[in-house]
Image 1: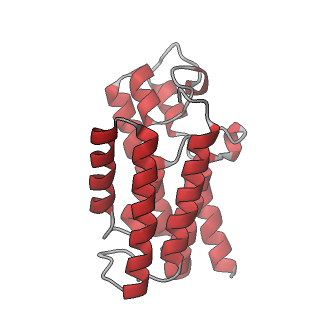
Image 2: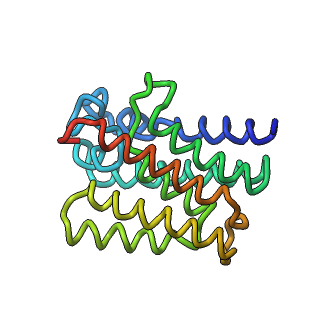
Image 3: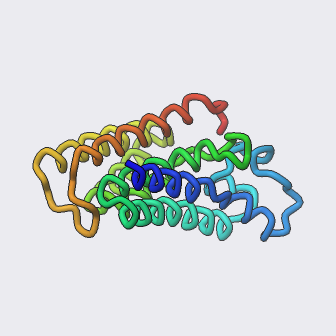
Length: 197
């Protein structure tokens, strides 16, 4: 139990790394805070809009990296359970970071990185579903809803059938719980931010 708690704490702290804030400072932009510029969301898309595509790409990679690092660190600390717990905590850390009074991003990129670490077998499916939904519906939130539903369903299938998970931890009950918790946090964030975000 102690190692699992440590894994959760490590995952959360990794998730709180303020990628967009760091990009804002490094870009020497007149914008002081992405939470008050553009859409008001400190994420990759708003970074690209306000600071430029290269900075947006950098934030995207950084946000994915912290989710992946959290899953890997959690596994090293507490095995498969630690991996799922830390990966979930990294999403929470990105959405509700203690360093910025809980004003974080939406968690999409961080959850993708976490998937690369703990559910790599699903990652290509996730990317395909999200891309298809975005291309056909032209609505980010609709794409996230569809992608999230497939994510949870796939996690249940992998767990129940014990399917191969590439380099990720063995599918346990922690896998669907990770997908369900991640989905709940991301969708809640989408519903609570103002419409133009």
